[in-house]
Amino acid sequence: MNYDWIKTRATFDAPKAAVIDPFKGTEWTYQDLNIRAENLANYLQEQGIRRGDVVGIFTPNDVAILDLLFASFKIGAVYLPINWRLKTQEIESVIADSKVKLIFYAEKHLSSLEGIADTLLHMDIDSQAYDDIVDPSRHRPFQTVSVEGNELASLMYTSGTTGLPKGVMFTYDGFVNNPINTALTYKINATYTTIISTPMFHVLGFNDLTLPLLMAGGTLIIQRYFNGEQLNDLMAQYKPNFLIQIPTMYYAMLVAENFDLKNFENIDFLVQGGSAPLPLVQKQFLKMGQPIITGYGLTESPLVCVNTPENNALKPASIGQPVMFLDVCIFNDNFEVVQVGEIGELGVRGNNVTPGYWNKPEETAQSFHGEYFLTGDLAKIDEDGDIYIVDRRKEMIITGGENVLPSEVEAVLSEHPLVAQSVVVGYESPKYGESVAAAVVLTEDDPNFEEKLDMHMRTHIAGYKIPRLYLKLTHMPLNSTSKADKLQIQQFINEKAQDNQT
Image (cartoon, rainbow, N blue to C red; front, side):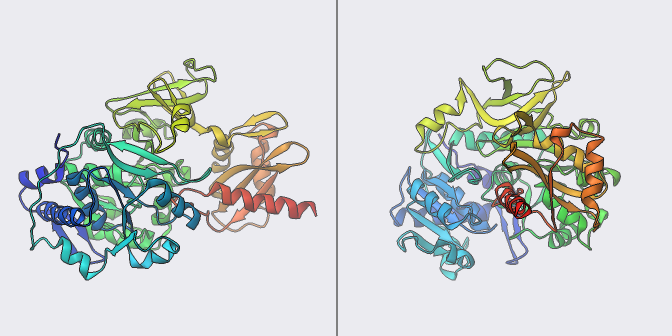
């Protein structure tokens, strides 16, 4: 079957801007994108790349990422975006595990690839040599290879928050199904414009934003690296009507000096995902008449649920209900379906769900119950069918034999006007095994914040759930996918706890 949809898009569309890169000052039509991909496909074949081979890219947001994806689809190769924010050991594990044949890279990040064999480091995507290869004025037509829908199309590695990254497999059917689901959900069409500021190695920015928009024939503005102030400037210039970001990115835009609500006047959908919502940000945008709706997905199943704008106003903590062609189920520990209001593990099934982890049959088997992929997220459902993510199963704190959900404590903390952001984790306690701690970013400096927060918590939550330790931060440390780095925070808090004991 032919999965070369960029060629079809180029055939059906009149010339228009498909991808704009303000950083490089370039603009490409859909016809350009197809020609660039055909040129690169010819080049890859000349380098010995064949159907089923893995080809990688290690760059910030750039049109080259799209070049390689579309060229891979034409050849039947396996597309591998590599997270350039990972640590050296994690990057090395991804490269070794994937058996990648060659890697395109950005010169700026080449130092992160030290120790990788020179034979794998193929070409700088910002070089003249690369531009010459993909130059649309030098078209080298390519005959697209026919592939089966269940063949491997892409490997996308997890962020490695609980160990070395795992390779999530996507088939061709799965990889194209997700953009279709997303486009139908948000009613994306050729009139849509968006700015891609989340990293394109991540499913939120790539599978849930970039690909649906391009598949529908819209216009994509590339922000090479995220910066809240710069993004506000891009918003003013391009006036997008669709935006998907991680909550911390909306926060960075909101606190930047050049934030202007007028830049959002064309917005149809403001969507957040990738991590838990920030109540302060949601409330602020809602006050300004721009509700941020919550979408839910994960690397293994990019889009699962979305809240509607109307429902979001009533239930801002909910992830809404499943999108088209997705089923969800919440299981207890005996794999029985939970009742309304009960907490269990969320399972998902659908055509965009991974068939499993690359080279890890045991972990794959453990991650499924029948057709349902087990997300590791604890969730509950209400009487209307709306779903709430409660916490990660692995992040449950057990203190003195009592279970504490970090999200419950964070929700109470967020109600205090001093708290801009909070992350709750467990730390080592000689008395209780684990105790509850909170890292907080404050809205204003207050030397008595601990006493004030403690008083607030004692009137709103059970005693064993109250943080025994607070860590004040000027900003939350983020991991490679711009989520709060809970491992780093936990390390800071354990160090503070040990200092307090000495």
